[in-house]
Length: 280
Image 1 (tube, one colour):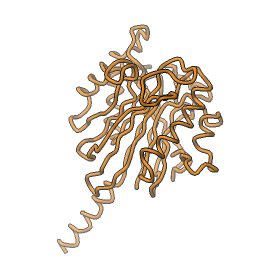
Image 2 (cartoon, rainbow, N blue to C red):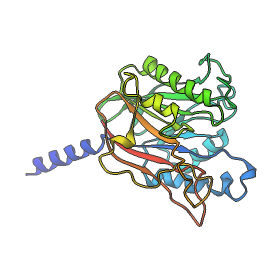
Image 3 (cartoon, rainbow, N blue to C red):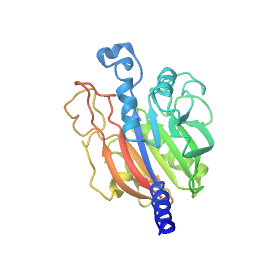
Image 4 (cartoon, rainbow, N blue to C red):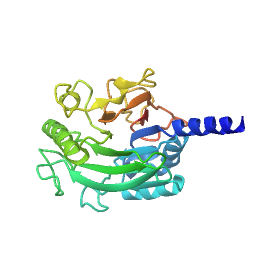
């Protein structure tokens, strides 16, 4: 009887380990002009969101190195991160970093490329207002040795052509780098579901297309439709611009949510984090 009990306990534990809590979170850069909403007034709330929802992978956008250093202190020691500053490939400018649970995953490889005509080189692309990047990492899950990729990005908020060409380049680079390996793609795409960049990314006629986790969720989407808040408690109409996509692999999406927690009238960022509970 004891042997059966422990076998059942082991089987339950292994099954649970197959779930990945994946979060994408534009954390809003740290600037004094934000007044009461500046970083120092919200960083602890933001970190507590990541901890409470037990994010295994948390991809961030608009993260300065000082913010990343703060999160290193505020998050448990089980987290590590990868990424590069978009303005010099080192620490200058915003990061599209990936925080991950180093107690659950081995990080096998990582790099960053730029969304421009010469992706290996720092620089603007296609009329973009700012340098834009994609940081990716190859992981191995310790529990079963399964390998997967995570790509994280932040598309330009001004140039229409930049978002269109970035979508095309993203699909090309995922195919080139990840091949047929299961891949999770996160980011602030500054584009609504019906817009051209998202239609390019999710086009079912393109064999390299990505699938939105929201459309795969076994339970209905939870939370507001819009993920951009502008620090306002009233929902910004139609501002669904943050996504978690999938490609390759036998993925299942158990839950999908836009988390709209507020503390004394203050959000953790001007974007809500988006969470998907994924198994594969």
